[in-house]
Length: 157
Image (cartoon, rainbow, N blue to C red; front, side, top):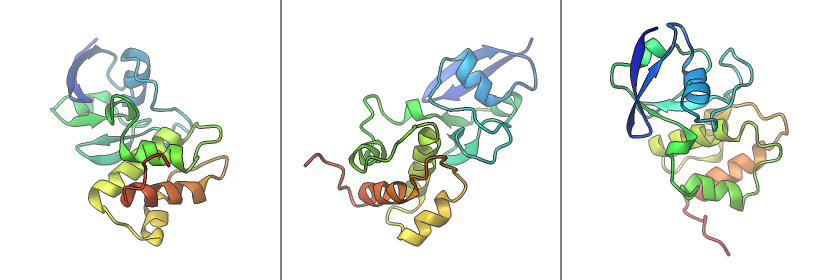
């Protein structure tokens, strides 16, 4: 089996996996980074959203061999050491999660939005977050949390 060198969360990781293995399975099964979730398997729901070179992408359909050229991969585990990224703090303050399954994908998409647009309007938030599905319907709380993170209102009160 081939060996691939990946740059994940600021560290070089070497994995030996079959060609064609998805990046999602490498992250979860070979590297133990289980924050990225598997749901639909066809890149529609967004639960598996990660960042590649600061862009949100769906890991469930991406093949590992396409990522051994030095691209920077960031997973939910790479956002912060103590769940203290402003978006993670806003998620807690707005009480976003219910079942929690889509939350890592939602958070990764939200972080990408705020990195490219630090002060989005509610309409821009809705448009950008549109591709991340939530079975529990927490969309209004997601919008609220992103607004809180954008305005740095994530401190405990």
